Image (tube, rainbow, N blue to C red; front, side, top):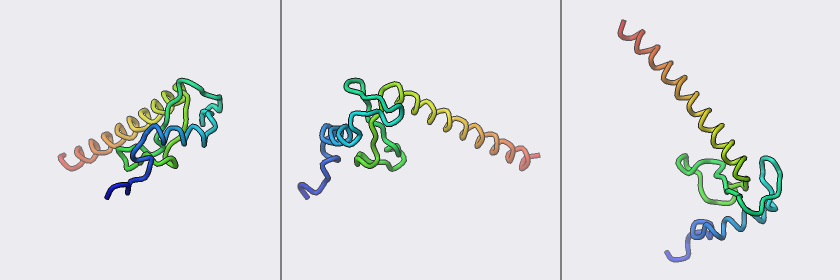
Length: 96
């Protein structure tokens, strides 16, 4: 039905303005005030069920956003490496 979606599902502009106001134009990592060069970060990634609801978003400066995404990527890489190592170990045991 028309009008059933929340505003944040319709308008990224509207949602961004809400997050900027809520976070008082302050990067939520380094706490510096950002006027330009801000980025909106999904706390829970959309690919893992996160939404565009303001409660799942936070304001970051570009530097902190890049660092946060790098840390996340590094952690996921380490997890995959451990999982691959574990699977390889079991393959060796099963096929000896």
